[in-house]
Every structure is written in C-alpha cells, then in structure tokens.
Length: 125
Image (cartoon, rainbow, N blue to C red):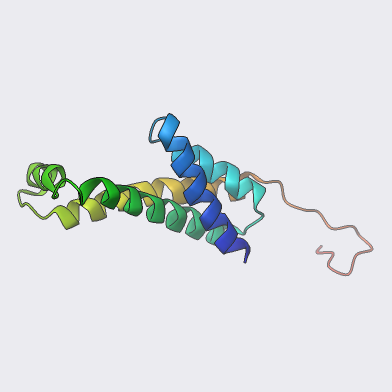
C-alpha cells in the first residue's frame, strides 16, 4: 500500500513541479516523497522509477498525439536515424524513470537507520 501511495504521490508531485519548474525537479520530488514514505531501498527505487515513468509517459503522449508525432519523429531521426517516434518516447520515459528511481533510492539510504533498544525483542547485536 505504501508503494502505491509513493508512486501516486511522485507522479502527481512531479506533474505540479514540472508545470512551474525545470525537468530535473522530478528528482527532488522523488527524493522528498521517498523520505516521507518509509520504504526499503529496493521498493523506493521501484516507486521512483514507476512514478516518474507513468508521469512522463502520460505527459509525452498528451503533447505528442495531438500534433501527429511530428516533433518526436524528427527527434527520432536525429538520434536513431529512423522516424520511430515510439522508440524516442520510450527512451525519454526511460531516462526520466531512471532519474526518479535513483533519486528515491538515494533518499532511502539517506534516512537514518532505526536503532532498537537492548531490551527489545528485535534487538540485533
């Protein structure tokens, strides 16, 4: 449940942040949400990856479909020497997702570890 909450918060927070600020604010949003929602590093990476991937995929398609894939086709020719706009959108989403995943992952390691008390049942020596 915390994983789904983190994914939704990252997608919505990134949408709001990117409306007013540059693209790299997705890393800040992923970092802050991962600090707020207490997830283990693997799940934190997954939530950052999926949250930003969902947002960037929706944002790319909302901007790309109405104009008939003109810009993404031209950018695909520039990068891949073929007008495969789907591949360009995939690479764009992958880059954003990796940025979000690494930011959330680093926040999970940034959080201080909880120390159990000596009398606790879960005390590890």
